[in-house]
Image 1 (cartoon, one colour):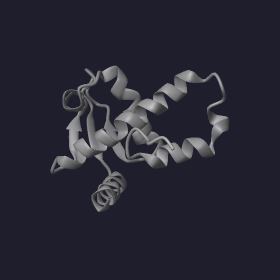
Image 2 (spheres, one colour; image 1 turned 90 degrees about the horizontal axis):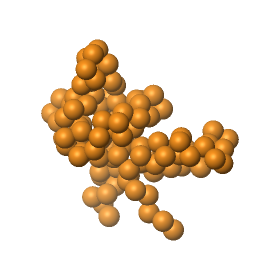
Image 3 (spheres, helix red, strand yellow; image 1 turned 60 degrees about the horizontal axis):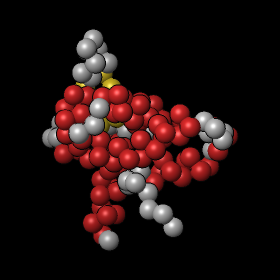
Length: 118
């Protein structure tokens, strides 16, 4: 069995349960989902390391060494689908404030605890 790219096993399980949402040939959406799996864990981990659970999108780009173009759809999934983060989009230059929600903090702490137990 292939290991997931990150600890976002919930995302993977959700995708397997809802194949109608990603019909064959919808590679655009599946690419975004793959990016969410690959970057979602590191995003949550970076936010969890901050005492206030906040970083700007530009800080996350630097921390994760990814482009803003790759990061933005991942942030949207983490915010809209899972409600693990909140995005304050008030900065007109795109340096949005990203905040870890209590739900997101619970999830990342659960995953980190599970990984420590291994």
